[in-house]
Length: 259
Length: 319
Figure 1 (cartoon, helix red, strand yellow):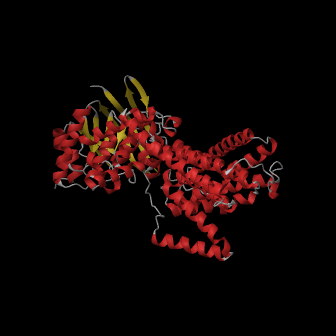
Figure 2 (tube, one colour):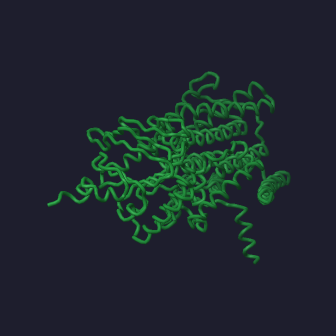
Figure 3 (cartoon, helix red, strand yellow):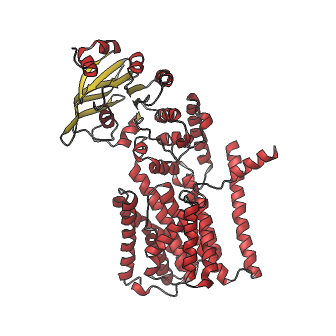
């Protein structure tokens, strides 16, 4: 097990508000981690910093690319994505006027090349490249039972499938780490259980690290290997689900003081 | 190999359609049904098709609301006028188109880098301003003959040349849209933050679409100057940008087929209404309002004509 992502003393201030203060964490290869905490704890802010949507006020984020240490602090979101950090969004952000297939193809953008002339003048090479990439996207969609909706527009999919398509899109980037921002939001218990199964399946099948933000304790506790607990921007605790369940400070943050 | 063959079939079909239309016009010209008046209408329509598909690429597919299309058209027009007056050969005309495209690309990059950070109305106003700057520069230069404009531009853009150029630019735009680049610019249109986190350099791709649109506008400008033989800076003002925008919006933002159909409909309507004098603009406006009321997404919305789908539905009907 190697360390993929190392976060040291990360701070994010929005004006006078410290959304994330002094968070240090470590994400290893091939693991399933959860980031939990009450509303406004700074989970999404932390995610946004890790994926380059916003830049941290201070602290360091280091990504390990086959032994090479790369600082992500001043990298743009698209550069971080190219390194292999994929994500989904809390409020679904699909390319809603594009087809399901095209959504996945966009995520594969950096895995194939098409010259301008090649595409515009339709050289045979163009059709071959397209064929290979479309097949790859279809196979991926088939794993998630989305292949029959392939030519539908993404905005016409039902909510649950939209969430699933976002995960497929993340996977299509063939990432090293996949960040899932509240994947179970708005789902009923059965859907949540199915999602848990799916997350475990993709983590095993694709050998990637999955980091998820979640409110649903039942989902998290039975699924992940390690949990980070965030409260009011600071890291409260870190450990296995069992340890977290017994941790006094965590119980206090979630349930309040004992009477 | 199978994919190549299947695609070859569709491409050949398209080629046949384009060639058939060409010969149809050719025969009608020879028989005399198409006189110089109708020919003028056709060439204007074809130039408008080039302009509208280019603008639709920027607005409908890249999602960047630009009102500066006439500015890039002016660059192409003046490049063609100045160069062909000096080098009065077909080669000179081709050279002038290339020079016009290159200058338009440079101008689009200079205009695009700062303005494409803006969104919606702000971008529209910024690009409108940029086009006005181009027009005012042309208005004040000696080489462009100032506000009086340029006359006696040699006519190299005959109707066959305009027709073929229209086909080529439309093919380029459509093929670009249906490729990796097209998917990328549409993803940027739909959700910039998501596109960025898919590893897409959104600034670069917005600029790419803007530049490609500007290049086609420059070609259209060159054809316009060479066909009409006279141009003046006022031909390329805000009204020209808006009339191109009207074609795009009427046909459907995000439908190249729609842009072509709307260019034809408006071109024909414009010619028919010419006899009505000032009443023409009233009828024109009423027609536009009716369409906006009953079909707000434009004539065709985002629908595209596809020979592949036509074949598929024919096959289904047979079975």
